Image (cartoon, rainbow, N blue to C red; front, side, top):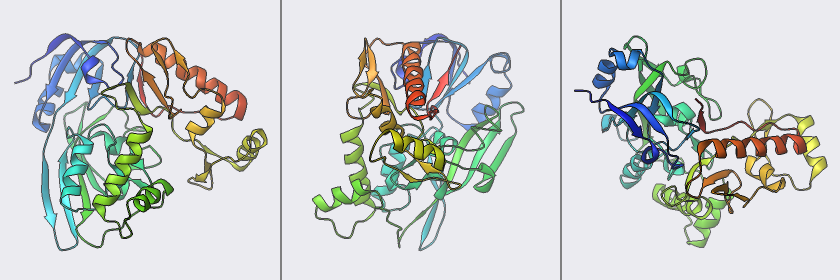
Length: 342
């Protein structure tokens, strides 16, 4: 039975800790409930916002529509052999909780994605990635529900059209499909251990680990993330606010003409990625505080709400940062966070 709330405060449901009201609010705990929901007048007659962990969202005002809180749980083994295990995971499962579940069983493939906030359902939408690994490397398929018809549809890995922090669910099918579950294939042995990012190697060396396993990599990633990023439970934030831009050779040359020692790493299609945090820091924003909001003192890519800040204030700060990076380096930063405007 669906229960609709009215004028529900969304502050507990977003990691920026932004106070905003949802005119209507409902929780769903199964795919069947979501199908039922699509047939209601509350769903059909209102603007819809799907909320998972609320860790990749910025609310700039009250939401004049229906907020659907995804609480679909479950981690089920659907196939396994000596080498691999295939899992179907409810989209409302906490992502890091799922990673811990896998690491505890020595299943490999997602350990580099430890401590990323959010839910499993958001993982393919964003094609989350960290420390040399992206979620697309383990996804078999994504099960969805058409928000217009209530019909189910399965997207295999190729149909998801994964790119850097991109998928078909953020582009041509944005707002059309609700992700109900994600099926992933992980390794049970002969793990592909990725320690390509120097910080992981440094942590492992400090700990005297010479032949790292799944758990070692996960613990190293957790240590790195905790040293760099503020805990959303303590300081309101949504992690990396901007994507790392990919630039062509002429733009890279222009950036290098402005400053020495530009950090880079390979991008797709012959482009070069430049860390957005570095660009922001070069423009003097790291550690800047403006009233109740600001830029984190340890990571310029993270915008923070120290308490009492509004979503519109954070968005205005983001736009000032973007303008200054554009003016100095000729690069237009794109938000990684999903910004909800009135």
